[in-house]
Length: 66
Figure 1: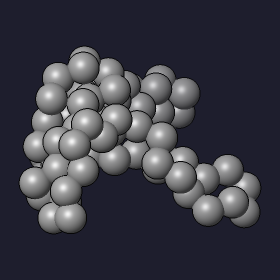
Figure 2: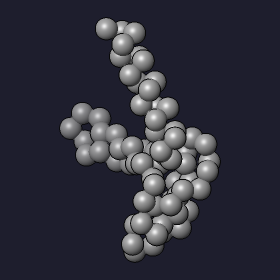
Figure 3: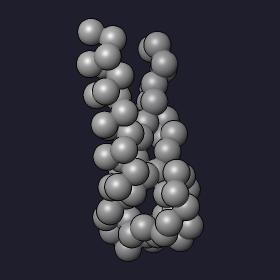
Figure 4: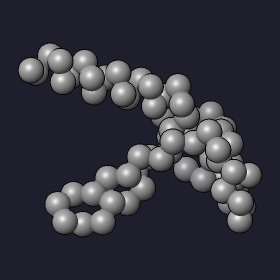
């Protein structure tokens, strides 16, 4: 979730939707989701630590269901 928006995206502040820590705009990872033929829309803002957690969980699920 964006807390403070600036014209320069690197100076904006956001809050991680998973751990609620404040992050700078440059360190933010945005997850966008598009279903079917719809254009993707921003779903979550994550810090790098939480993004790694999500990435590992997806990889584990993929290996388990191979």
